[in-house]
Image 1 (cartoon, rainbow over the protein chains, first blue to last red):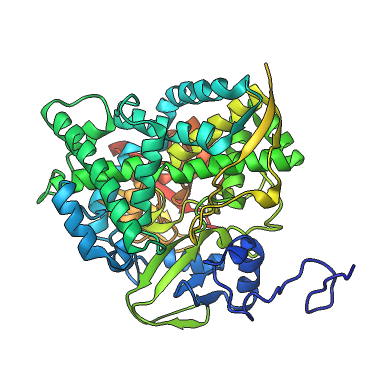
Image 2: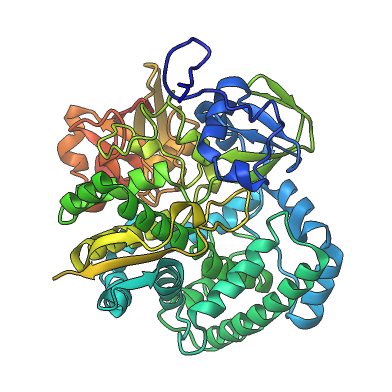
Length: 437
Length: 106
């Protein structure tokens, strides 16, 4: 066997695997499967890399990613969102939503300051760390029910049997939606249709199908919004519908804002948190040392919190999100022309050894864990991070308490991922385990 | 109206006067562009980007972090016993003259 050496001739990890030389793209499955070596090569040689197939610049170094976070005007969310929404079929998509779905509602939160600030402040109040702490026992009840439901069976498919039902269950309860009316499959189908409008891989036929799904979803949510307008309840839809905003000219949400807000709350935490749960099972099943750390942390709030944060650092479900350059701007030694699309690679920043020593090592005692950017950063940082952390923490605890000897029931090379440049999402993860306790 | 002082990580003192008490210390820092108070999560106690050290003379008046804040602070770099998240410090008349130092981000 030939030992691969890096350019200094030292034995060790290869620094250059030829990704740049062959013009690799995150849209190719072979590159997407080797994401971390790809990012490492880019950080070393071309930290702001033009991905020829995605037609966008990938920003890979921690410091450059932070520079994007700090300047939401130059690196615009709104411009990219408006340009790419519905993957080039926007006019037809809007017409379908207006005709059959109660209207076309832009995501008000996918905007730039100061417009962005109005909705952002409202959303921040919904999921503060303190408010989520108060929800934790309810979250635990939902999670325990679902894990207990599979515990005696000895095997499960993590995405469909555990992760999806947990995230859908938690958010539906928060919003006050009846799980008898919308099951996990419905929530997932709706989420997929909404998220597909932000991706770049939807053809016209898929757009028409997704638009019909979104119409179904909006009609359902609009009926719930109308109910809460008449008669408020103790739930998040009522809170949003009746919210008073710190904005003297427009102190309440418009109808468009209400629909886009309820829709965003329902969708935002589903696929991402479910992905993080699947990643957690994958790591527990394949890395005994990490599984041991999880067991040791189970009854210690500080340690289990750190376990979750390190998992999100090393295996973030969202690998990157897009922005558009609103002017010519220099970043990482490259001039990015006005109007260019960019993807800010959170996963690469979290893997940058200039910020996190030995980045592939799972180390819960890192002194700078709060600087991990799995939730993004700046004004667009994930507004539901406290809820996601809480779900992940309780899942970790209840897995350890109820399931033992977790193993993959599939060969690692057979695990399929959802095709996506921005998300690292396991499609199916069959596992086996024993019942504990 | 009260006065609060932030000492930025580079040593610069930012004395901010005529501050309304209907806000958190973080909101004052952010509104006045204090270096190092980025407050990404907007005051949700979820990100530790508004980390400050309370001047020893003020520790007793300001009080201690609660459990939720302590969990978030724990993961922040350069943690000290006098660390607090400024988003969790609601201003009030007794804090007139409060002085804090912005913790270095890394």
